[in-house]
Length: 192
Image (cartoon, rainbow, N blue to C red; front, side, top):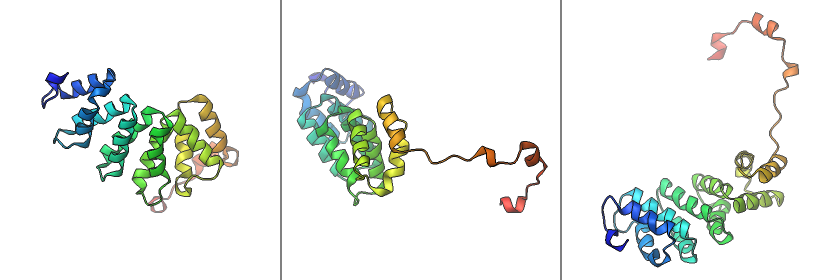
């Protein structure tokens, strides 16, 4: 591993090996790449961010939290949020919860945090709990409902369906019969 820890086409693979093998002794190596201080391309940086998420150490959470607090490109912020979400621990979800609840954060960052939280079982449970306490930000309640109703966790999806009922659908019984609709003429000017 150490012989390949230089620039080159093998660097993303080396980062992946470090993460998969949970080589915590290479934490500093991943930190440096994740911060982008060496000027590596985004694929290397993103691999390091994902690798930190796979290590699931307190140091990884600290590094990812610091990255989340920095002004970063949306794609990088999304990678950081996904890495924290994949850890699926309470400590890892706290930075996401802070972004989500912070009314001063921009709307895009808050929606990304919402999606990242909903991507884990613990995050989904936390969001449902916040909704039951009426503590979800009002501007994100509808979006939270839409996302949580599609949860991959069946039991939590069922809870979300009850907590965030789908708006009433059109009553088909009130529509005219198809034969009556076919007789009507459209108005192209009105359609514009």
